[in-house]
Amino acid sequence: MNIPEQILEMGRRAHRAARTLATLPSNSKNRILTAMADAITKDGDAIIAANTRDMTAGKAAGLSGALLDRLLLDSARLGALTEGLDRIVQLPDPVGEQLGCTKRPNGLLIRKVRVPLGVVAVIYESRPNVTADAAALCFKAGNAVILRGGTEAHATNTAIWEAMVRAGTTAGLPPDAIQLVPTTDRAAVVALLELDEHIDLIIPRGGESLIRTVAERSKVPVLKHYKGVCHVYVDRDADLEMARNIIVNAKCQRPGVCNAMETLLVHEEVAPRFLPRAGEALQSRGVEIRGDERTCRILTDAKRATKADWSQEYLDLILSVGIVTSLDAAIDHIERYGTHHSDVIVTDDEEAARRFTDQVNSATVYVNASSRFTDGVEFGMGAEIGISTGKLHARGPCGLPELTTYKYVIVGSGQVRQ
Image (cartoon, rainbow, N blue to C red; front, side):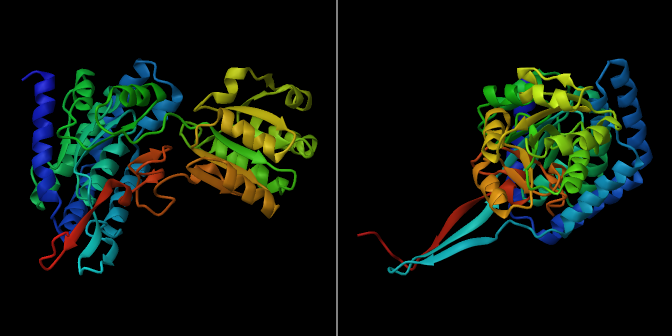
């Protein structure tokens, strides 16, 4: 078979598997997931060896430091991966949850019930942990899943998938419930995007160019965010020591991820006191600061920011810094240049915090906390399938409930409409 035919057949098999998965009991799902987690632990050395091959190839291909960081799967990250699967086991199964119930005057009982989406395709780059997270979350929510990882992580993804499916099948995993596209040819992505008869949702995970390509070409609904231009605004009534700790964490703890801070905005009344201390803390950690004219007068080592910097997702130790005249000016800046991902205000003024959270139209909005918490694990979801900055179906970190939809189940006793 050629690639489009191969992908079509995968879609057909996934579609059939989804019917079985929709009725699989919760205890069966949890038993299978536990077997998968145990298999990843047992095959840990082989999985890390596969990742070492991918890392070597990635360095030879000139992948950036941020991409290599996403690709790396060491023993600590492998342990976190299996812990994530264990957490998913502990989460309540959303399938079958009653979301509402109404009894009509004619006696009809109308129930709103949570059900699986059906078939989910996940197209992702670099991060091999997505293989396990996406497979486990889709499966627990009753969906069949087709995984298509990037070339740079192909060996690691294959090793993880093989361990999960082998153990899962022994524990009762239905055939074709979790499939991995075996080719890294981009024709496979094109074929997936055309498969609207068999795929119900596509989730792209990766760089902006991948996500835009998927969103623009897909015939299937897409859950996405293009990039994370995340802001921290330090208000005039902020605790400046708290603000310094938050921005250092938001920028430096892991700069190559979508919830890292890319722009710092500071109220003009506190900028002369705050920026020298903040700049020293950031620059001591290797952060390059690109500031507006007023910032550069305070931080003389800063580079002058260009207009393009304000909308740039650096995914690196680079930070845009601007001084604003008011809370409204900060909100205007975020709405103009932000991507509705994760934005923060640091303030002791409750009214300022309320206005910020009411008016900043982002999927996650923080008061006095780092943007780095935008993550399914940190939100108590066990893991996440992705982060959505759209407004329909799901928004923010997406876990088990966001991998379901609902239907109405109506029970009558012979009623007919007059």
